[in-house]
Amino acid sequence: MAEQPSESKAPVTPNPDQIKAFAAWLPTLGQVQPFSFHGIPELFPAVGQPGTLESFFLNAAHQFGFWTSKEGRYDQPMIATVDGVARKGSDYLFYCFQRALNADPEIFFPHRLVDMSIPELDRLFHDDTGRNPLPMWDEHAELIRAYARWFVEHNQTPADLLALANAAERPLQTFLELVGQVPGYAEDPLRKKLMLLAVILENRPERFLRVSDPESGVPIIDYHLQRSALRTGLVEVQDPILREKLVDRRNVSEREEEAVRTATYTAIADLVQRSGLSVAAIDYFFFTNRTRCPEMAEPKCEECPVQTICKQRKDLFQPVHRTTAY
Image (cartoon, rainbow, N blue to C red; front, side, top):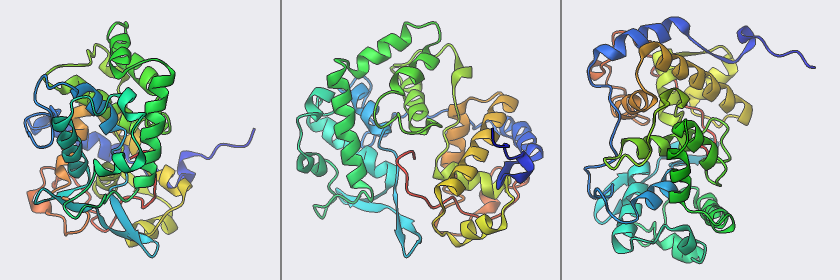
C-alpha cells in the first residue's frame, strides 16, 4: 500500500487553535440559529402548500454552479433579473421554483418531470429576457432527467423516502443513506446538497423530517463556507502555489479543490462538535455572513460579529472549480 501523506504534507490543513476560538465565540453571539426556509413568499412555499416537499427535493439538488468564469479565472457571481428584480444565484433558483410551484403544484413530481422535454424544463428558469441564465444548465438538465428516471424506475416518490426515514430508529442517518442514492445527491461524497435538503426538511414549519439523531449530520461545504474558512483562518493553506491560485482566483485542479474542501469539512465538523451548535446553525451563520465578506467587494470587517478573532485574510478566495456538488 502506498504511503499516505501526513497532515504536515497536506496542501491545506485545519487550524485547531482557530477552531477552538470560534467554538468558544459563536455560542456567545445569540444569533447562530437555523433558518426555516419560510416566510419569504416569493422564494419559499407557504406552510402546507401542495407540492412543497417535491419542490424542495428537486431544488436542493440544483444548488450549484452560480458563477461565471473568463479566461481561466473566476469572473462574477450569477445575477439575473426576473419579474423586475435582480436576483443572485440561489435566490434566483428559489424564485423560479416557487413561480413554477404556484402555477402547478405537481410540476416537480418525478412522474411529471420524466415526461417533460428539455425546452419545457428550460423555460422554468427563464429570466425577463426570455433566456435561462444558469451557467451550468446542461448539467442541471441532465440531473433533472436522471433524478426523475430514478424515482420512476424504483417506483418511489420523495414522500416514500421521507416516510422510511421518519420510521427508522435514526431518521437523519437513514435519510442520508436513502436519498444519497438519488441522482443529484449521489455524486458528492461530502453530501453538501443532501445535508442541505435534510436541514430544509427538518427546519421547515411542517417539520417534514423528524431528527432524533443530530449527531448524524455532516457539514454543508459550499463556496461561501470555503471562502469563510480560508479568510478567517479556520484552515491554513500550506502550499504556496495553491495559495497564489486562490488569491488570483484562477481555476484550480480537482485535487486542489478537494484539498481545500476536505480541510474545510474537517474544520467545520470539529467546530460543530466543540461548539455544541448544530450543522444547520453554523451553516446559516456563515451563509448570512457572506454579505459582510462577499465575493466582489471589500469585506466589511468592522461589521462582522467575528472580526475580533478572524485572521482577516481578505485576499483569499474559494477554489474556482466547476462541480455539480455545490
